[in-house]
Length: 320
Ligand SMILES: O=C(O)CCC(=O)C(=O)O
Ligand SMILES: [Fe+2]
Image (tube, rainbow, N blue to C red; front, side, top):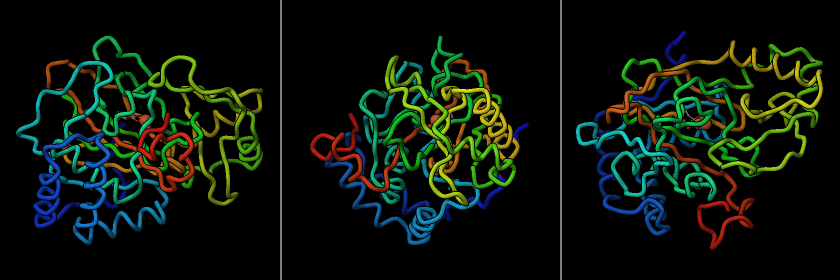
């Protein structure tokens, strides 16, 4: 069942809408992956309207029970959007208004980051259905996408991911699902929590990284604080190593589904997920490949960029 997100969305006021659009416009034309452009966007993000900066800053400190922030009515210039791309591995190289809006908001939250093996390390990636990839457990698919921590297998997975909706799907059935461990933890029996906190799980890399990426070192699914743990799991890629661990994983999945929320995004909606405490997925939908299919743009952020420095050439934004 699709319900709307049960959380206070921040709706961008008319005067802020104009201010955000004008900042984004001053970043066009440009090349998203050019470090100089990213630097300009970071500097300009300090000129975002104060209310929006405060929302981002507070969310960075505490992402709340849902681990989720929804900002609505952002300028995406819907009337001049080109057809939704259909090619595999599509990314946004040119600085368009939507890409600039996404980068402005996310550079205010932290440092943009991408992964070289995934979509060639592009900082802004298209999330679009691709012909022939309908069954893929990745964002090119249109079958149900299991809930996951983004890049759960990766030691430098993003702290936050953002999805900006440019177009919804034809039938309004593609629902972004988000569930946080903060909501699910009280539902978990102690013995399940204890198993989930032990290194009894192995997570493979997602298909977007290509075959054979990642290693198979057993890891816990719950980490850090007992009261407010981090969650690292991918229900399509995490394998339990013994029957008790398998049972614990199933209980966790059920708890997350029961507390999860599903939202059909509208054009101009920006969802920011705290990838440390919340997992996300998507319900199935039916693409038509007619240029009007669902289209989101995605980017990732790290909070402590220094930690991944050894894997980022020239202190750039791409992890090898
Ligand atoms: O299609 C969606 O709504 C989400 C896809 C996804 O998990 C992602 O792009 O990271
Ligand atoms: Fe994802």
